[in-house]
Amino acid sequence: MDRPRRRKQMAEINVVPLIDVMLVLLIVFMITAPLITQGIKVDLPRADAEPVENADEITLVVSINAEESYFISLGAEEDPQPVALERIQEDVEKILAQNPAVPVFVEADESVNYGVVTRLMSTLATAGAENLRLITQPPAAEL
Image (cartoon, rainbow, N blue to C red; front, side, top):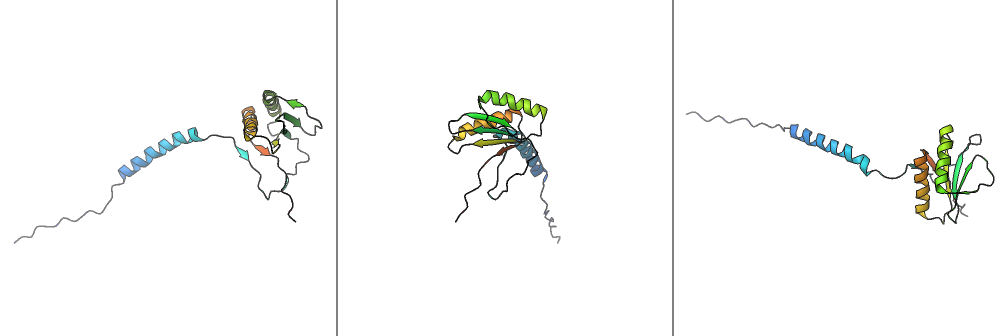
């Protein structure tokens, strides 16, 4: 009597459909990721950061006081005058066109609304300021 031959089972996984699915997902994420990203790139200071020592470098400081008035100063300007937000964009564009390496600092009173600071930072980013830096006071020394 002949016994029927048993077929040897194949223990392989066909990965071609999995590769196809992964490529489709990769393309979907590559297309949608830039659309989801919003906001302004800001280099925030760390709590234990040391003060920046750039005595020789000219800096551009844009300030907002408690009355939500904007001020712009380049270098060691003593008494800046209030400026409209649209004028800040024009001035920053001109300054950065002449010297793109000028660091841009944002200084705001702590009582100022977050939306006002965000509007200023968005205006500065539109003007071409890529690396915005926030000016803060060091924490009070604990006794």
